[in-house]
Length: 251
View (cartoon, rainbow, N blue to C red):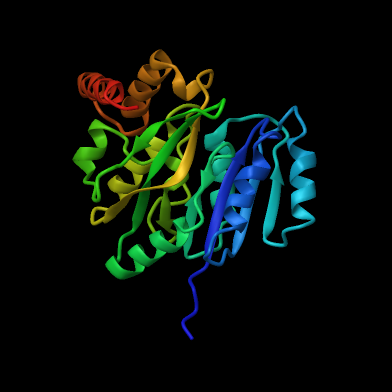
């Protein structure tokens, strides 16, 4: 009988008491075995820690980490990546949800094609439950295409754990996920990235969040291209403008 590869799921959480159980249960309900679910509470001030403690008592694969100071999602993901033991690492944000067949379809794709990084489409839902639409990303992704637009939804991504730089989440507060994908391309010249256009996650859009602010995204992208990716001021500005145009075209 074929043995399924080990998958580590990493979930950063901050003041996620009202949504973290929904996220964790979407992992435990997968029709694919999970090796470990790693959750880092980034010094929440709500009841996140209590909710996680209750979940850990019911799910033996759930491993909890707690930060003493809030450092942001990038730091939380980095701490989680250091602990991940699986051959594959799957990302999930605390306020998003996986669909039941997500992991199975991605792991099958990666094993069949040798892809190093995969992502999926997403269903977009407002914080009050309104369906806003869907995003169906391309079925393959080159480095040049990624620079123009980040089509990888973090909660849909799965990476192989043996890639160079896979545990090195950039130290920036915003857009560190985008910088991470760019970093993987830069450190792995033959990186093969494939996507499933099918919406296999539900992404909950909070209009008051950092990621929903156009100005903050504009500044965050420029900082990311300039300071993390290492591009010139002119190139960083042009790439930031291109990203802004693509963002306006999205849901």
